[in-house]
Image (cartoon, rainbow, N blue to C red):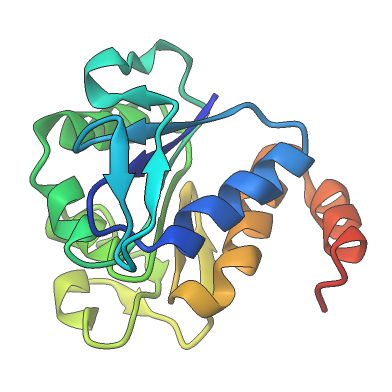
Length: 179
């Protein structure tokens, strides 16, 4: 199961575009409401999460997705269960995926040290020790990072590629007419 963590102030497209791409690939996905069952995006759109953080159990995690947005990123970073989920994902070697401001969470934990990564412009300082990339989406080992909302489909397809292979990602790319 891929878990996409939602906290009040999250960037809606950065969360739901990867959910869409993963679902098209046949990957089971659940959204996790960190700040409650009903989570309000940064643009004010309420989203009903599949489960709340209180109901989340790590046992079947295949990947973790952290959308950006403000103050969503800060709300994710300040949650101890999100923090322990990231630590557990790294320990069992499953992908941890973060877009926009959310790579800063990984940077603050030192997880991107000596890794190649990217983030929304202005958050580079949180990625100290990271080899910053000019690419919009970057995979280094089990870390997938992306710049922002404008590349959320690419971000989602990169997660699909990691979990299901390049052929599946390319098939979806063609189906949705993404160049």
